[in-house]
Length: 161
Image (cartoon, rainbow, N blue to C red):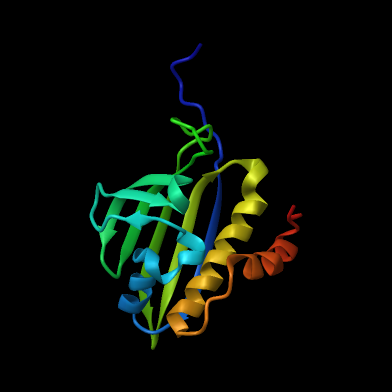
């Protein structure tokens, strides 16, 4: 046993996506679960630091750690299986940051740590989310999650069951 620090590397997934329109429009899609029921499912994100996050009927649970309207949203991300009182997975952190960019908004999405065995699956999922966000922000019809996921599974080499 040693008192010295131990160093490691955590896997993460990061995207930078340019979206049309002002940050306020993007913020509304990111924070109001009614805009993306195909992603958020039955859920809510309480609009305040310390607020509860419950998505997909409780499959995802967390706590808002940063609430800066139209600038930054961050929350913990815990995956629960049906009947779990405690998540069998390590807690991770999702950060969504918005920056005006000309007539649009750059959305930075960062999720970490990601377990090594889930890196490709995680990238596929967040790419799918961003595709859905993009369509919602543009005012285009948002397809079913599976439609986006099939294309992104191929992109990241994920075999869908």
